[in-house]
Image (cartoon, rainbow, N blue to C red; front, side, top):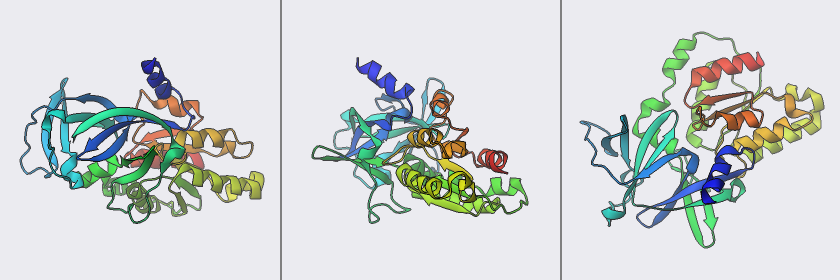
Length: 304
């Protein structure tokens, strides 16, 4: 029965629900989207890499794949594990790469609505923070981490777009308007820097799907079929507080006015195994982060 429930959420789109794996670093409880998790294993002694980032423990080989091991406690500023026997590696896949995150314990899986996930306050959330959501369950709080940002902080080349911009060459400046739903401050900053450089300066950002939907519904109500005077394309992440990108896309594509608005899902969760989820809600295109050049060509094709 539990396995059936797990398969259900992995196969169903547009429910605005998510499953998170709960784990702990010291006494702090955190979470990761179950879709990112490939497996949870006991620690393996890693092979150290000379001159590596101090939070990179080394690399392990798992079924012929070489996977970097990240000391999550050290990265987040916590003390080493007080009981190494309970330590686990969470092997995760996103942005078309696999990583093993060394945590102090893994306890359970929670199925919740994205509406239960609160955005951190401005004091907590900044470009430096790795917390992108807070889940309250009874009297407990679970911190959701921005794993993409963690990896960019460890390996800055993952967020470097200069080569892509150079490869695109000189491009005309477009008057087309792009709405972007993205909860990660880091990703908003990267897109805000990148898109104007390739000719798309007219950007409107929202940090969750609910805010983006309310904005688009307001445009549809005010302008009707002339909504394209105000917005020409929507780019959305999947994982966001309040409303996820799949539910946002489904709602747009079912709207009598906005259904013609092109929607690109730009997410670290786009894989061959999960692409059907975006297709089922009507997404026009799906691009895996950080494929910025692919994103550029798709924008060109859909709105120029």
